[in-house]
Image (cartoon, rainbow, N blue to C red; front, side, top):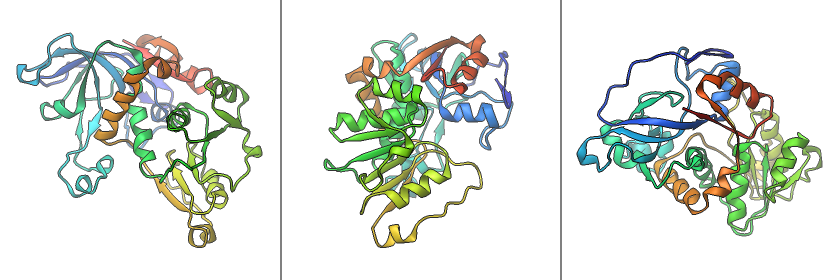
Length: 318
């Protein structure tokens, strides 16, 4: 249970209402979880349960769903309604009428709304930890849809954290040159182990990249990227900036050089299903991103480890 900045506590909570229950096996800590724990978040008022990147087993399911107790599943923490104007325009990630699971997933049981089971629950062959990364990969795929990437693109990712790494893995899989800009040597070494090119931020030569992903929540990186993107390039603001952030962007780059600025938050359900298929094709490749595992009773230590930069992706096991 998240109780405020740097405050976590294991508590007993009621079993969630609902006919479709999932017993959580494991849930990875995402950047939003970490930011909330460190500084608070306007969308998460304590006390509440965090976590949304999870896999588990079906605990209870109506017969008509086709699931039985013990089935292995990965579950989307939310999903678009599919009927509103935003959904019809292909922007399901922005839907304001989403289906949501009962709570965050750093807990034993999650309830899934019955009208969300068909689209939001995917059966697994095994409880492979790699599938906890379906949700973050879905966010990356949703972002990439907005970036106008072509086979001739050359992409720079600012930030060598887990999300920046997922961008790099997907771009490499498509044969698109990608470089990660990362100031921390230890993190550059981790990224390089995957065969991804890295640079110190001060060594980046702007003008070479027609796609730039800003995966660190520093406004100055966005402003520099707009100035430095190649002609007709795209700057994608992937990291959530601090509340109230205003950006000062180079109007010349946007108007005369055709630089486009896009952004995204979250995922849509088609991207969630594509992410599952991608990981299913090579789970070991993605499982390597999970470098530390902790039990739920040691959640505070898990968050401290992640905050110190001593892990790449951290998994809480229940």
